[in-house]
Image (tube, rainbow, N blue to C red; front, side, top):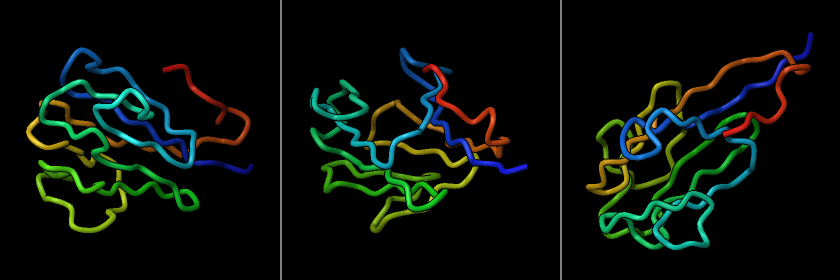
Length: 115
């Protein structure tokens, strides 16, 4: 039976704590400005802070030239970083930490998930 990988970001802190964000698009922009796919209203987050993007079944995160940096597992990014299960993404000094989770699902149940 064919299968697909479903990727999810889960906020560990803040008002969206434990709210899953299903990653179904090829690209997500994260930042303080309203035009971002994921908007985070925090002074430690730049207007255009980071970018998540997919290549095949793999998601990557990269800093978008932010003032306070983008971190994966407490390591500041200098180049795009492939995400693995359990990776924690932190944007600058903000309290928002995302945990990356993926699951391999049969194709028949791999449709969009309500966030």
